[in-house]
Amino acid sequence: MRHGPGRLLVTLYGIFTVGAASRSVYQLSTRFDEAPLAYTLSAVAALVYAFITVALVRGGEGARRLALVCCAAELAGVLVVGTWTLVDASAFPDATVWSDYGRGYLFLPLVLPVTGLLWLRRSRQRER
Image (cartoon, rainbow, N blue to C red; front, side, top):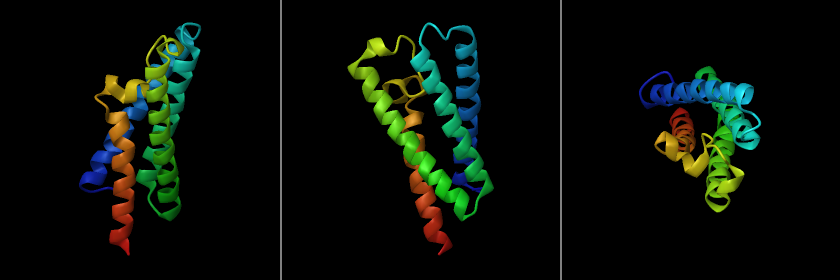
């Protein structure tokens, strides 16, 4: 993960970790009453991004498995929250990182886990 496209993946996950964490900390501490579900889900997204970032940087088989699980959880979260925000927009008076499949973030929250899963699969095959 320290070279080529893997480095870009780690960088993007690091940026999303900082962005989602800082946004959720601010929202949870100043406006929690306005949209508790949305702000809590943004904090969950930040934690998932952090786990993926650390696992990708750490490397090794255990970290790879953790990254795979977290990328799958992230993809599930994006799909569930994205669909939920379209079906029942009133449940989300404010956006989350995963709202509308990450539309506010140029759909990167939808693309990142797919890219991560493919990269992890591909890099494992190259090691064999």
